[in-house]
Length: 459
Ligand SMILES: Cc1ncc(COP(=O)(O)O)c(C=O)c1O
Image (cartoon, rainbow, N blue to C red; front, side, top):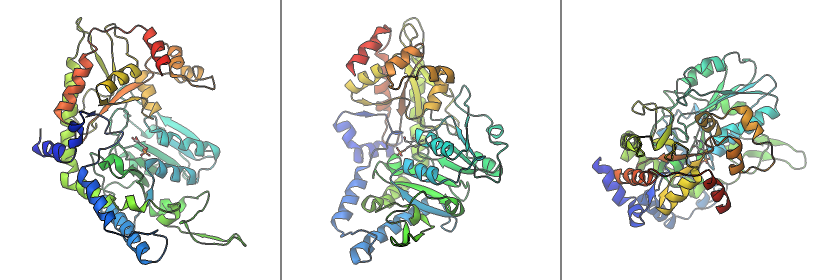
C-alpha cells in the first residue's frame, strides 16, 4: 500500500484503529481528517463572525469567508465564474430539489432519467408529473450500465423545457456513466443535470471540459467535514430559466407587503434560502485544499486497488461444495476507468439462497463493521440488479403500509436488498481482509426461510 495512505490512516484517521472500527461506507459519507476539524475549530475560536446578511464588521468577516469558499469552488471545478454560478445548498438533495421545483416543465416537456439514480433525482418526477411533463426512465442492462442512451433521448420537443438527469457514478453499483452523455443530451434539446455526489470523492470534473447545465454535490462525501453544505453548480442561463415557486429571506433585493412587489435576485443569491450555513461553508476551502494535497487521482488508485483485492478475495470465497459465497451486482471488470470503489453484493448460503441483508448487517454490526444495506436510496439499480418486474412490484406494494418482510415474501423471495461496501482514502488492506474474514463466517451455513420472520420480530 502507498506509504502516504499508511501515514494518513495514523495521522488523520487514527480513531478508526483506536476504537477498533472497520469503516466500509465511504459512499455514505467520507470520514473527516482530524486536521480539518482542528484547523476549523481554531479559525472559529480566533474569529468573530456575524450573520452575513448584515453590513457590519462581523457580518463582513462572515461574507468574506463565504465569498472565499465560492471562489474556491469555482477554482476547484475549473469553472468560469461568468459561465457558472455556485449556489450553496444544505446537500446534494437540496440542489436537486431547487432545480426540480423550479424547472419550467410544461405539458409536452420530458423528464428523462436513468433507472440508476438516487431517490433525490427520482423525486423530481413528482414535479414533472404535476406540470404535465412526460417522465421516462432509461433501463439498465445486465451489467447495470446503459450501452446507448441516445434512443431514449431522441424525439424531445425543443420548444419545451426538457431535463435529463444521471449520476456520474452510481451509488449502488459503483458504475461510472459516460460524461459524454452531457453533450449528447444537450444536442437533443435537454438541460442536463449531473449528480456528481458519489463521483467526486475520487474523481475531478473540469467545467471547461464538460459543461452540464447543473451539477450537485455534498462536501461531506468528498472530505467528511463539514456536513450540511452542498453545492449546485449551474450554468448562468440555465439558472435564469428556472422559475422559483416562492421567495424568502436572502433571495430578494426588495419586497413590499403593501403592494406585493417583489424583486428577486437572479444570481446564486436568488436560490440561497434564508441564512447560509456560513460557519460550515467557511470550512470548504480547507477541505478542497486537503483533497488536492493528497491528490484525488492518488486516492482513486488507492481505493480501486483495494476494490480489486476485495473482489478477488470474494471470488475465492466458496462453500465446501465449491459454490460461491458472494454474488456481486454490476460489471465483473472494475479495472477500467468506468467503475468506482463501491460494490453491491449479497451473501449466498450453502443452498445458494440469498441471506437476508438485515442478517448480514446485524452480524457485521456485532464485529464493528460499518456497511450499508438495503436499496441505498437507489431503487432503480436495485430493481434491475434483483430482476424485479414492474408489475410484481406494483402488486406487492398495494397495501398502504410497507413491510420489507411481507414484500420479500410477495416477491417470491427474490432479494429485496443488498450489502454495499465502499472504500476510500482511509481504507486499508486490513479493512478489506477483515470484511473477507467476516464473509468467510458464512461458509457452509444454511438459512431457513423462517430466519426471515425471526428477524422481522427482532426489528
Ligand atoms: C449519487 C447520490 N446522489 C445524491 C445523494 C444525496 O446526497 P445527500 O443525502 O447528501 O443530499 C447521494 C447520497 O448518498 C448519492 O450517493
